[in-house]
Length: 271
Image (cartoon, rainbow, N blue to C red):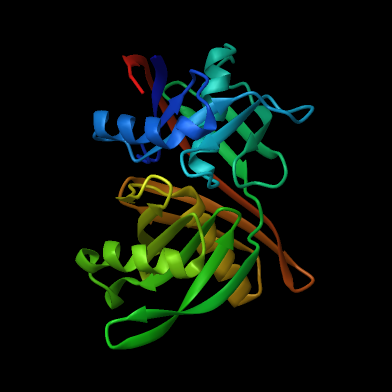
């Protein structure tokens, strides 16, 4: 089978968008192959036909999780394919795995990249979970989105060398197909995100994580009880998060960032 895919860079969270139709049952296998082929890539997404009226396309992530950066990437790719003019502001409705409702993605082509904003699905819950650590258990903030849960860990509380093994065990306890461990430095508004996807058994220190950024914004909003507008610094750059808080709850959550498109590539794979 010949596969066509595009390498896309949303805040250095290198995403491979597969545009050749691939059966869902084969997607984890294809994702594993492409991640071995493209060493810089952090995740794989698959373009599918949307089933919802008004949606331009469907984005299916390699583990069925939701990913804001990948949604932003698809929005930029669609604008590229459709020949959107520089400065033209477009809002696209997309089906995205892990999101119960269509996702609105606003994209503006500029000279060297695309500016994107994604209306994230609201968390199912923002809570505290007891998780195993050396010598017992400890409480950590956790933000549960459809398909992915992010655990927020103070940056000085855990070494990166032990985080991957810890997250693999946590993911099973959290009963989430994908899980993130966010090493968070609140004074610097910075994080290092590790994301584990059970379907492909991959754990990646991401350069930029959209849903992880949204998780930080959601948690701070609930903890502080007020709207938030912050820039979450990550190894690959910053992702802006904006939230609204009304009647004692989080009511709106968006992320914004930049997207750079690479060339289309082709490869042959045999199953």
